[in-house]
Image (cartoon, rainbow, N blue to C red):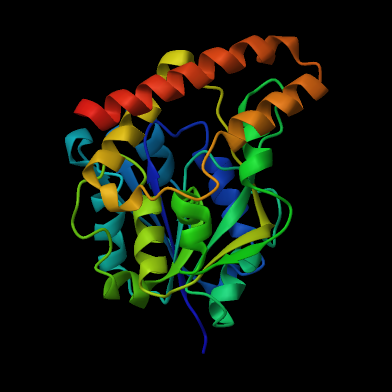
Length: 289
């Protein structure tokens, strides 16, 4: 079967990303399999719309939506429903795709009928960012296939699946009714992973499909992100499955690595960041916004 791929990418104030992102997509070894590159532009204050409208690539489809109409879940869901491709690839505007085999490595497990969904390894190159350590822990250098059996062992961690760079068979997405028409505040990718595994589908973490993607959040931004995550778990409690080995494994790993690297600046930031995560999550779970 000659699989066709649609790439879906929401854009918001993306002028500093869009040109390089588009160039990196055009350099992909599987470029001939791409049917459309679908940009959804939330009304921006910069030149995002102008830059996209000036692109001459015939594979590009774009639309403009109002800020109040954007939803992490519904915006993506609507775009999938309008697609006629075999495989849907989700990406975020700020991922840097440096390797020309990124797409090939991401979708091959689906094309070969090994799994129904997959996601890329995300790398942070900034050693002065806490995300350097979270990426190192959450995105190891070995691939893994997750199945329904992983839920008992991993708990909620089984649903770790990022649509900053991910792929899914479109027919499966539709069979599962996407995100069920829900307006999710965040973690729509985790919700999809939950549905996939619960319905006996498989997800592959593709360590050989790499993107550079990281942030350097302020304490307030970290708090807000985890508050939104807490609200998501309040709205979808069935996803919040505890594991037998529950604990602060990520925090312990990060602290050990920071001490090993003698990163004094991040040592102090670590405790503030963990506090913001913990409080934000609790507040979100308790009373939402």
